[in-house]
Length: 119
Length: 379
View (cartoon, each protein chain N blue to C red):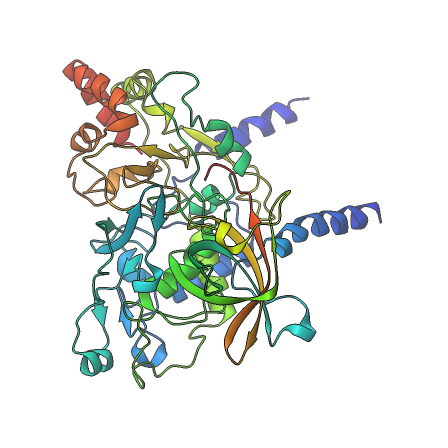
């Protein structure tokens, strides 16, 4: 029984980081939102603060893709200890963007700038 | 009373008499089920794709085995093209123009539609890189070396003043990388899934969207196979085959080779080509907590202007990940682009952080140089 509990605990410990650090273009886990909600984690390629657009580089291995999204007045921008503006993001920054697909393309609901060290 | 010593002697004899692992062999300690997946994975690895089964419309190879051959998992003679743009300090992998892997072949349908024989070279590229196909033996072991070990070897500010720095690369999402000549890709699983997409344009559950043509959408009708073009089981089997490929057993060292191994350490090669690494936990016994001959620190080092080509992630044009020295005895070309045809040339082309060891090598008496080469040829 103890072994079973240990195995279950170890499995949980191993799976949590897998889920929370899922590759960039994995669909959000909420099944109710699966059709329209996406989370991307990638490097900022371009920012146009005036147009409210953001381009991220995501991908798998050496197969990379560009993901383009718009921001809205309601988009929340988050960074460690600060609330940055879109114009504060720059190429090379790593961000996690929670988006939904609309008729006009991807729209970001939340963009978080990540501190990944040694960049 | 004599049984335990007898059993130990028998065990030592059995270990001592184990057949050496040959290039292309699986890990020794695989269970029957794992060995079965290795064998089935090899079939997928050796598959040849056609446009009808998912190949292209842009591609470098028609199957994994075309570039990793003789035996499966070994070297190939193909050389591919990569391109990126370096605008210091930021590296653009030019994904919007088809980079970083620029496919060198097209299917007949794409050729007919666009009149091209290969993907156009990205107009924004600041550099072109040639890349040979490395052996992929022992990659399952490299995959399992904990990030903490890599970080422990890193010395980005050269605090020990030995002229060798070393720092990890990072993938686009910020995770530490280790696979590829620039150490860009974090895991073996992702490298394999990405290779299906980037080398063969075979879409799969991890990368379900097709490569475009220099950043432009595919013309209608040139990609007849529905996405994903291989399923999860095929991807998993390929991954298991590569993961379970064992590093070949080094040849038994003679007196010269043993001396060469000492010279290797004395002149500083082992500062970056760390002789042994240890894996962390794995449910696969043959990969779990294993010490193995790696001869790499999986970190980026500045190798000097002469070798510099593209940037990738945090790697500047001159930065390369320390190449694991595996199956050197089977190699006919050396370095990331195969420009060296002998081990001596490869060492002498080391610049930047490798220049100290290179200069020591060049200053060695001929006998010591020969001993070092004899050691390397045993790997």
